[in-house]
Image 1 (cartoon, rainbow, N blue to C red):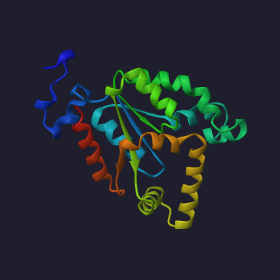
Image 2 (cartoon, helix red, strand yellow; image 1 turned 60 degrees about the horizontal axis):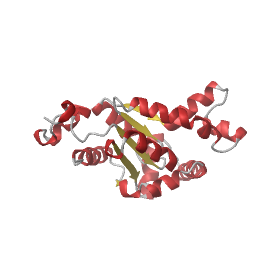
Image 3 (tube, rainbow, N blue to C red; image 1 turned 60 degrees about the vertical axis):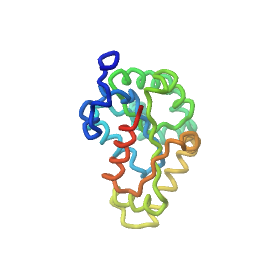
Length: 207
C-alpha cells in the first residue's frame, strides 16, 4: 500500500485499472483530450468518463453555454460580433479555476485551444497528475469518420464543413496546441473500440 491510501498498481491487473479509477497509483487527476474535429475527442471523453467516473469539462461547450446566456447561438457567433477569441480570453480564468476544482475528483478536459491554458493546468495540478491524448486520424479516414458520425452522405459537403471547422480552430490556436503536444499523439483509423483500447493501454502503462 502506497502513501495516502493509494493501491499499489503492481497488484492490480491491467484489465482492472478502470474498475478502481483514480485510487489506482498513476491514474491522473486531469486527462486532456485534444485534436482536430472528427478525431474521436468526444467519444473518448465519454468513454473515459463512464469508465473512470470523471466529469467531462468541454472548453467549447462551456464557451457556447456562456454565449447562449448572452443571447448568441454559439461562441463562434459571439466572436463574429466581438472579435475572434474574445470570449475565450474573457472566460480563461474561470475555466482554469473550474478545471482545478474538478481535478480533486478527476476531470477530463476536452477541446484545449491554447498552450497557455494547457501549461497553466499542468502548473496547478502537477505534470505527474496529468495525461494528454492528442488524437490523430488519417485524412481520408477522418472524413469517413465525420460523415458516419454526422450522417452526411455527400463528400463535398463533409469536406467543406471540416475545412470550415479547421479554419475556425486556427484562429484560437488549436494547431499550436497540436504541435506542442505531438509527443502525446495517439493515432488511430476511426475504429473506436480499438482507440479506446489504446487509451486504456497508455493509462495502464503510467508509472
